[in-house]
Length: 220
Image (cartoon, rainbow, N blue to C red):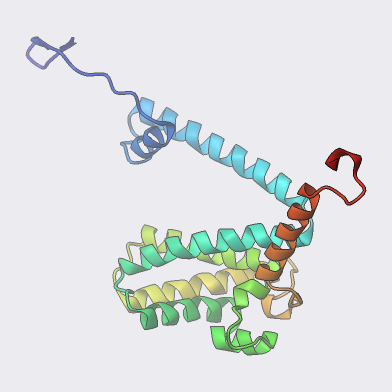
């Protein structure tokens, strides 16, 4: 029973929420309320703790495994970016291609996707993201996540604004790389093997481990 404004009492139901539901409620509630502020601090701490754990685990992996993981992450972030861009009217495939080009132009100093494709010497059916090393993929992941965040934060509502925002974020990421003394993405080496080749080899390796050897006593 709870007490209402005029002193009357009425029954209420208790709700058991999933962790994700709690997160959504807290993140969208009024932070001026102490319980909301406490919840937001908690989730911010837990998120950062998980990020650090993931980063430490990722740094110890071989380059090929890093590429596979980061390529998958890139796909996820591109989907999120596309969903956000739709709010600005970027719906048709041609519009999204132009939107993506603006991000690449900012990060790759004016180079569009086709320019990067030619620079890497790829075949027509090969995608540039499948022929990036982990460092180059990392720069593009940062571009995509920050573009998504800025589009949402600034409530961008037109195609022109969305394209400029994506370009601007790309420029900022490139500038950050320059300040840190890093290698510009277009100067990073292009891996010989595609992500698909690495995935096939990894799958074959797992299958080989599961198959008993010809002279393995345990197979008898």
